[in-house]
Length: 390
Image 1 (cartoon, helix red, strand yellow):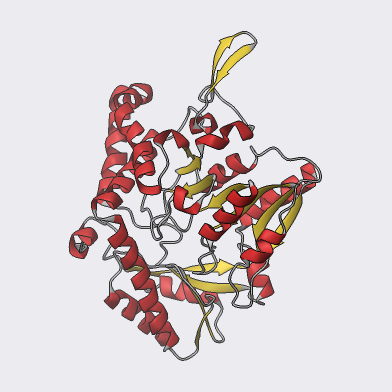
Image 2: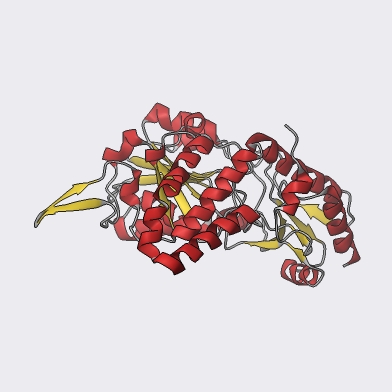
């Protein structure tokens, strides 16, 4: 299937305001997403929030069905949250662990997740074990497997780190997790929408994601997947009236599906907007859209590699649509500011985001450009020309 790029760009309000290459931060949303959000807010203003939510109950349920259609599993294995960090935290803190237990993570793990690891290490006495990079700077799955012992309670890694286009071997990690019976929590925040993510192929027990990046949904919405077969192994970190029914003065009936992790209060408008984004991606052919996103990133790397003074920082190997690079003698934040003056949006990857990775490579910060399937080759050419002019 061929994407109708002209139609896609016409359905994106931000197109034409400049060159947008910060999709790893937050993509430009389709008009259909904005229509869903605005339409519901209009409805709330007319009939009130609770009545409006009741009237949209079928559409809200469809969001869970669309998640299952995109990523596998069953609709009942998905829960909505306020962000990917919220989703990841609810999963992580619900894994029972005590002093002497350990968690295995990767050298390129994201800061938000690692801070939570450090918190439980201090609070609960757990040990953090870090799987290293191999000689080609890929995640060393043999080393990861060697770290597992009888006290290993969880493997927690990211599919794509935020500070490079590297892709971790998540399927191989899934095989290790299944063979050893260790729970597997995946941060797929940067992967969903640009790479195939299927819970059965990967073999993860839980994963967290966001609406706002390559799925092109609004900010303020995240979600989590929890495999039904592991629910009894978890102890939800918090509960609300969405998690259980208060059946008697000292009794409650707890949900047995993933929505035990939800809270009642949420932005219905944003959840409906997220659902519109999921359905939009499904409607334009998911696989073709993702392939084009990766093709745009590969094209940009080729252009940058031929630009004097520019060094690509992404490790060699399979790479996603996050392109990190340095310009000799230029501060990344200064370059970002200069490009913003030309209506070109990129971002900066800092050592504080993936400290173990960037610190080991002696990197303080990098420029980060992330195209989307709606990006044009001509826009990437103009972007490289603008950088050359600096």
